[in-house]
Length: 86
Ligand SMILES: [Zn+2]
Image (cartoon, rainbow, N blue to C red; front, side, top):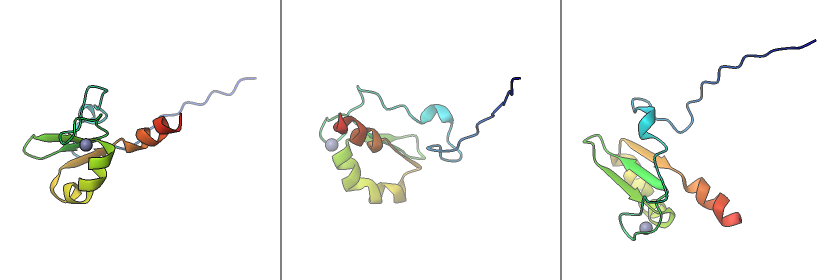
């Protein structure tokens, strides 16, 4: 006897309302911090279409100010902690 379960997962995690999903999770190894050139873990989008990227250090330093003025603050600093553990 087989029980089949169909799960439709609708997750809103990491996605901010009104922003296309394609804009989110776009940080790659070649994205670097606009301040120091380290690998970027924070992507900040503004409603005028501008965007900034920051490393974990500068992301933390500017995060509070950015959250107030930015349309989206996409934070991947969790990955930084995971990678540091290796
Ligand atoms: Zn930096």
